[in-house]
Image 1 (cartoon, rainbow, N blue to C red):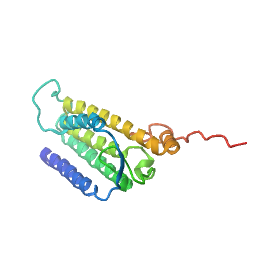
Image 2: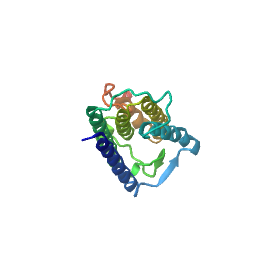
Image 3: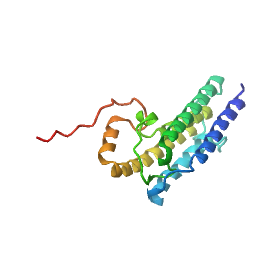
Image 4: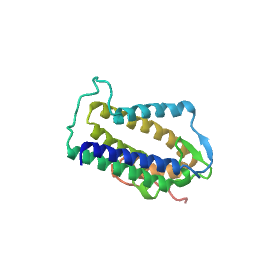
Length: 203
């Protein structure tokens, strides 16, 4: 398989993912609370910039353009595998989230705290999956600008998940604090799983 075939395979995976994402947006629950427009822009704009730096085929030469990885079949095979694994992980999470999903930070009518499936391993598995897939894209690019883009995307997701978690703590005060104590935000198995302290029984 030549390098162009690897790139076409990655593009096909992303296109299939986009089609699924749009199709699965139907039938979600009605929105009860939504983040402000300014809050949304604070993570959407950096996210768009980061993704552009990673996936855009060619950018004007500059300090961000030096090549860090060679063009080899092993590099492209690793990149393709990461894209496939990351997108599959995010789809798995999207399936478990069901009607609670939204493209923006919202609370839905009858919102549920999902802890099964991928949510058993990380609190934000959709972001984890997308970051893995974009890491694959950065490896395929092999340039410094892709690393910069990946850092920007990670920062945007960290900003967004903090807003999401403030909403969840309002809706599920005790349950979400316990969930946060037991499950890492983005990287599975990065801290010991432990139960939140329980209050002493009444005398």
